[in-house]
Amino acid sequence: MAHKYESGHFLEDLGHNVRALRLAAGQSIQDLAGAAGLSPRFLSELEAGRGNISVARLARIASALEQSLHSLIPANKKDASLRGQIWELVESSAVEDLQELYNWLSTRQKKRIPHSVALVGVRGAGKSTIGKMLARRLAIPFVEIDAMLEKEAGMSLVELFAIHGESYYRQLEHDVMQKFLAASPRVVMATGGSLVTARETWGMVRRQCHTVWLKARPKDHWDRVAAQGDIRPMRNNPSAMDELTAMLRSREPLYAQAKLTIDTSKHSPEESVSLILKALGASLRREKSPAPSRRRGASVRRTPATHPA
Image (cartoon, rainbow, N blue to C red; front, side, top):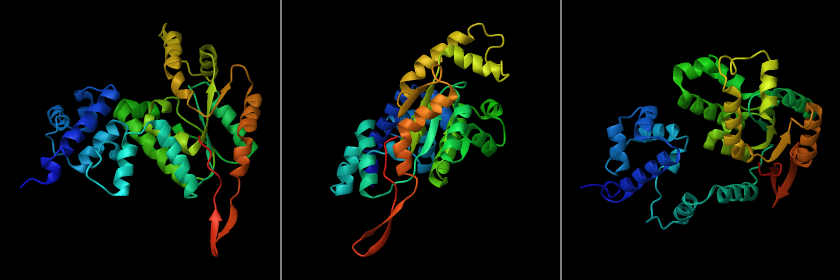
């Protein structure tokens, strides 16, 4: 006798979720199957509600879609428990509602941690220069996420892309960032220029960090990269500037999701650091050191207040 999850609508709903997320990511069945290490035929059967997949293989699909595993699994409509009903509401919530829920729960449960400062922007925005200066002013470490990824992979990013491809890079970026944010003290970090295109990783960074978009004109990006001695993006490519301009335009709505925007084409590095400190100063000071608190005779520690990233 078939189990209720096999004979009911569970597999159909699971397949519907996978298909919806695949289409939203702009991937074909062949693309997703290749990235997840599955056959296109099996993936097609899964999306049709006829494929009974293992958890490990479903996790590979989630990774290839840059989604969490639980986002693929449909809610049990017959779960009458309070948790089940809440989960059903969460499953259909917009990102803005989830962010508000996250902020409320973290405040309610007093699970508040000092936020790092994450600088985002295309290469040549000034992330390393401004990041090091800001870290010195705050007396906290400065880290470059790309360097951490190269250390983890044991190779340069150019080699990593050439050997393993973008899907592997995205998963490594997510795993390294998740582990680092969970274990590290407060830092100033320079993120990879394309991090904002990885929805789940960018969402995690926005939740747990004060995010700052270092914005600049295309020509300034171009000139700064060239000044660093790297002319690879421009070599033998007469359309390089047009491609850079188009990339900046396409990513602008994602970068604009950062908590703060600083135009480094209009402000020097010193001025940019001062503007960041002025805008985030109160938040950063409140997060500097936890204060003890007592509640009903129990000895507890009060962690710093949460501020939406």
